[in-house]
Image 1 (cartoon, rainbow, N blue to C red):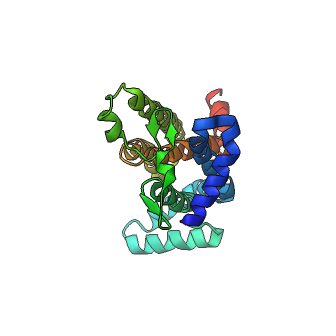
Image 2: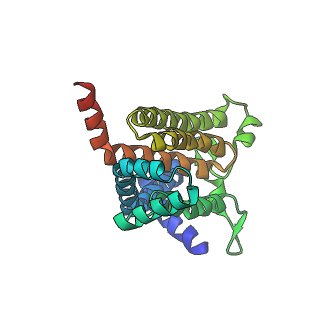
Image 3: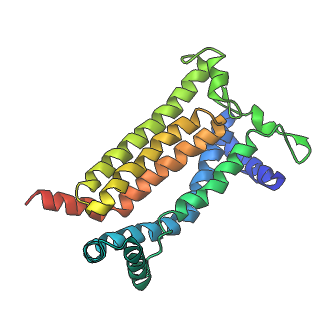
Length: 239
């Protein structure tokens, strides 16, 4: 952890001449973007797997009819089909799982009072009036919802809520053209973005800033990787 603190301090120092007191907050955003850039190949692989599963939907529907009275045989047949086509059921989950260690590091980095036997100086850094190691409950106790600290959190929550709403609207539109067995998950999974909003209210501000950044990245990334789906929907709607 002390190595991570040192690297984070170097990134903050590099940004300080441009951003002054907001350098640490900017370092969180930059570090998150760098990690997500490294994880982009996993996201591409996940989207390829989603598209491959969508292409298999008619064949899976046939298997459902053929093995309607034998769920175990149906399960094996679907797994065999996925294996034959080289589709991993975990491909879509890998980007999400790979991000978890980054979130936990960010949480630990801005919640531990001491790191490597020394006082954690990162806890004193701020975004506006709010300490990066503070929580929304602290802001409510120091000026309330519309106090100096409270406004920082309201801005953070507004960003996460806007991204979650946009993601959910796109997912609902996609679900209308999705195969029946995929429409339910397509509508429900984006609701996790609203869960991110709840999480941000209970973790340190630094972790919430990381969540806002990575959620926004995911929304834009998926929109770009699925842009052919949007084009197909517009073409179909114009007929």
